[in-house]
Length: 380
Picture 1 (spheres, rainbow, N blue to C red):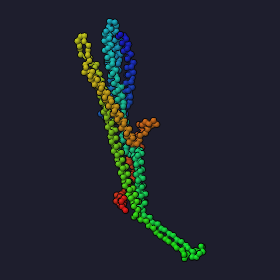
Picture 2 (picture 1 turned 60 degrees about the vertical axis):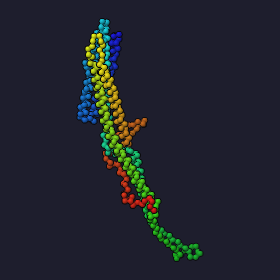
Picture 3 (picture 1 turned 120 degrees about the vertical axis):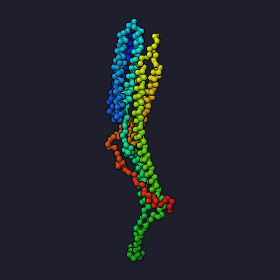
Picture 4 (picture 1 turned 180 degrees about the vertical axis):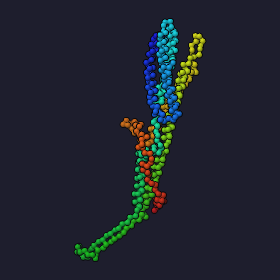
């Protein structure tokens, strides 16, 4: 029944108005985040971003009050209802079918507005951190490096202990006795007294075990020091690579954002192509949609889905790299439920160390002369 179909068609107005309200809120959110987005853009990128926003706002106004917008669709349905009668029953049915097709295309085009606006709202926090500052933060917060340095200091002290065992020992000894000349147990006389003084010198000439222990502590210290230096170099190299990866992931995210924007525009253009009136047909024949246009629409929608998946993957990759950076810096903090506290460190805070002056230096290496003069393990 045409009258029933007209009533059903009018029931679509309320959901579409809600969709317009959602699209308007998303556009407002996009406009609010513009200053934050433009902080990381070059001048040409700002112009392109501004042009995209103007185009999006214009599309929204056209869909709301344009020639083929929502207001025009409401007015057209009212005209169809006003022209309905028993004599125009068939014409009303044809007009209603054409209106439904046009209205569905309007809703499909409207659904692209929130997608575009939400795409522009997604941002990531850029980490402006120099590799030297990152290395400094890691040294100040990584417990494993603190423990490694403490173990190296223990090795250095062990050298002093082993060297102390090789020092010469000089002892002054003294003794004496006083005897009795007779059987009287208390008849002590000076003539029967003896006094002894001595000097003992213990040179480290025969201390084989101590010499071998000293040589071993020197080797162990040098080995531990090289291992700690190697681990610090590996940390610094890893942080440099991770910071470069973060910047690459951020740029990849922006590239995928542009790809999604282009895919949305392609879908919209293909949908507009469907609004083009078909060529005239013979009397009595039904107008057919150009099959190429339908295929193009399917391809555009498939491309949009793929680009959106790639954009999501790029965002997840950046987020994972940022999480690894916090872990490598030793500043990752968890809440009571075990979730990562994402903003646990302000990289722009002036309190962060910017030089290596606040970090304690490594204990010095063993002088080469000491290693050469130290007796070998097999020396006797």
